[in-house]
Amino acid sequence: MELKEKQKKILDVAVELFKEKGYMGSSVRDLATRLNIKAASLYAHIRSKEEILEWICFGIAQEFFDELQEVKNTDITPKEKLNLFIEKHLSVVLQNRDVTHIYSNEWKHLEERLSEFVELRKNYQQEVEQLISDIYRAEQWELRSPSFTTRFILHTLNNSYFWFKRNTESTTEITDQIRDKILFGLLGKHKN
Image (tube, rainbow, N blue to C red; front, top):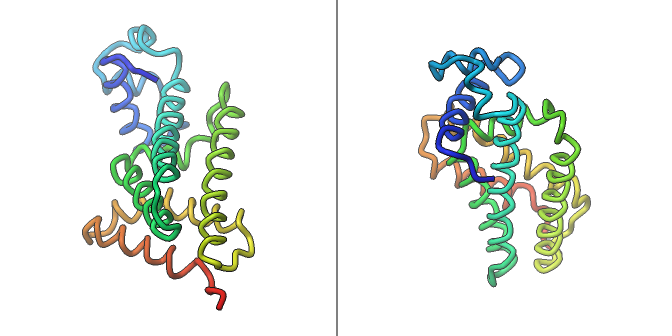
């Protein structure tokens, strides 16, 4: 998805607006007011408010997929691969805090492309689940519920924007704490 310069500006302002008022609480008129243009003029650059939500949701989803593919293509130990996945996912969240907040909370308001987005999320979860299952197998760790473990890890990572925004600690410390909790607090017991 390649946005034109004006669309990027609209997206930036929309992210601020959606974060502040929520997607449903925001209107095209609100967006136009913040951009200091007439609402009718906005439609020269966007189809609808929903299109902006699509840009947000599909855009960051693509970033998550790109980072996951990079992790999968590395030739490192399974444990290092899990560590790298966590680090890369958190990096996307950290660089896109407000977008991640909207992605995590507002995606359900997609209408035209909702089923496509749900399928995209499902595919991502399955790829992460496969990565985690492979790591558990290679490390000979017991994995009772691959699906639950994956959902738990993704939920923790996707909602980490909350910690990065509200905590006064450095982002490195928060990233390290999240990674340590996942790596050492959730992985289960090693088989002897």
